[in-house]
Length: 434
Image 1 (spheres, helix red, strand yellow):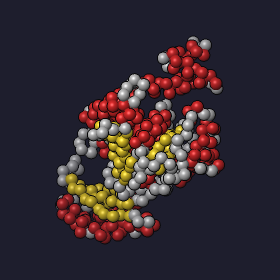
Image 2: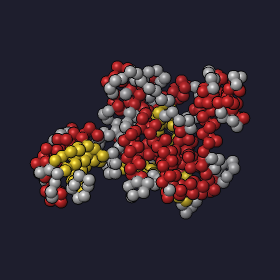
Image 3: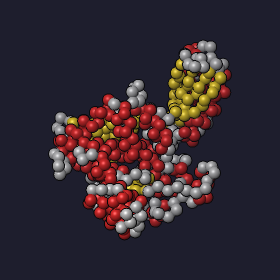
């Protein structure tokens, strides 16, 4: 696996100089040129209505309109030797800028490395009313091949693509508030789908046969969002000198990042905020590609507590040569087929902008963005503090809140940042409206 390439292998150049100083139309043109996307995709990424009301009306119930979020593009990402322009739909200032800047620093060490497991999702079948739960477990296991074959008859197309139900697992809960309970898990390779509809359909189809085999009553037949067999790992190795700032040597910055992460590793109060910062990077990519960000959130936080104590999803270390090494590991149930990824024009455009070829590749890039976002937060906390950079980028929002419009937005934003008072009151003073 090549991780040192700086020339894109996908025809994309994720280094776009001066993006922050461009107007939206110019940014869009620059991104289109760098990614080689056509006019149709550009239109779906534009400020025009990307989601027609007629399409929205078919996606959910009781539709009355659409709700828009800013769509930005994170630059500078190199993952496994390939360059990526990453779409991010998010309302919070500093997220896109922070991810892009950290990705630029990580390039000095060859970019991000990432890997992922086979896209296995779980469906759970809950069986109650059993006098002999351990006997029921043994009986179900004796029917393993039959149950797998029956599940796969539900989706022969998936099986033809190399996916399908691969195995079953069975847990016994001998003592619950309602008595003994058995839970059978279907382990399904969903290929490039998120997989919820597939595994739910398999579980529902098997329920009557499971009741026949066990003599019990099936209640729940539903996927689990703790996709602990569909895990992605991403890492970055940054030379200490690449972390040097005007005020601090790179080695001191690296040490500060490691020490800041240490608190998240041992303290759930810090870990909750630490992991929220990671999801600041992950969720916008999930949203921009039409995936289920609630499922990703649920799986990530459950995984962070899998050993009985909630902890950090990342680790940061100093290598023997002084380099800063960061890693992230979490479940990542993303799809590139089905759902909103195939009905929302902007989601389709986001996938084309990324130029990915599989759900696993999308998961690996998304995890790298999460690691970059975490690095940005820890770097800020370990050096200047989180508010300085965040509030500088928040200044435009403050200016708009104060009533600025058009060219006044940038003028007011720059003035309040220069004054060191990023507040609505100060912005109104600059506007002459206090």
